[in-house]
Image (cartoon, rainbow, N blue to C red):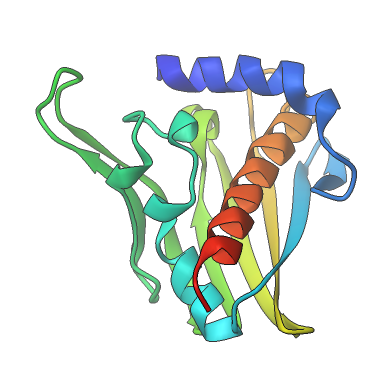
Length: 182
């Protein structure tokens, strides 16, 4: 949990430094918020979908409970878990469900429900949606995260931070996708 407090504070300072076009808060009110980010990758839709299902390859270790993205797993089928499990090392053992899959259409769309990071501390939930569409020689991946529910301190203040963190993950996804041999 301490790592996620650091995550929030770092995100708060960096939220204003988001490069235009990386991501944005598309809606924000007392009822919730929506953030959206898109990247174009040099992979066919099926390959891009397979990479999304391997967050251990592209998610930032700084935004995990264990401090190591290699502990992340995503089973891309309905009921599948986007989970993190770590062993009995110096931090002790543990696990967390970040989200679970509710819709899987390989090569087209992957939808999960869950509260990411510090959002788990309140009765808040979100719909994390990855949409894939052909774009030129590759695929456009659009991530949206719609969050609603009661949050101490309000949701509007955290929306830019969540946007920054998810935009960072999308940049990591693009970096790995475009570095792969084709």
